[in-house]
Length: 138
Image 1 (cartoon, rainbow, N blue to C red):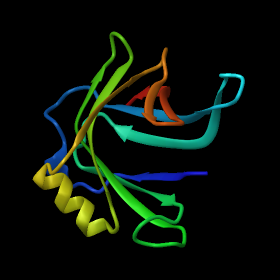
Image 2 (image 1 turned 120 degrees about the vertical axis):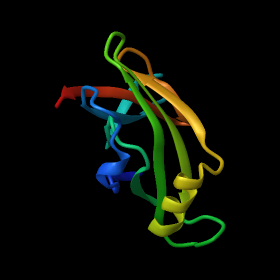
Image 3 (image 1 turned 90 degrees about the vertical axis):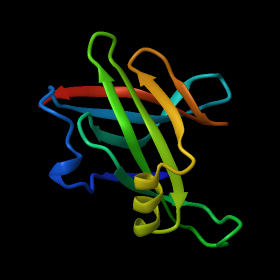
Image 4 (image 1 turned 180 degrees about the vertical axis):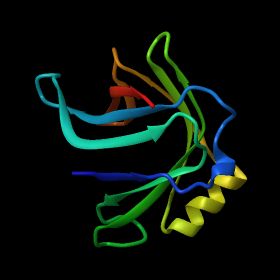
């Protein structure tokens, strides 16, 4: 199971100019043997006006550590379209610590563009799908 916690680490200088602000909650889903999407209980929470938002998740053992450990990711170039409930971002990471992901994000190294909405599932990994759960206008 993947644990995801989003923490926006950005000063006011990261805020976009006076546009409407939204809090977008994106849910993580897996696909079961009957082709049903099953909510994992994990969410990503984004601010539509902040760049280089970072979060960490618990990863299973992999090439750099056999034990479970944290991976850090970041979102930049965020964009929310209220007319079709669509949210896009460039995702950076994973990195192994907070300082590294902040550097990767601010340098825009190796990002992947992602777009989710509230009507279909975006395949993020072989058995991990993302979909908007809620949008709150701030």
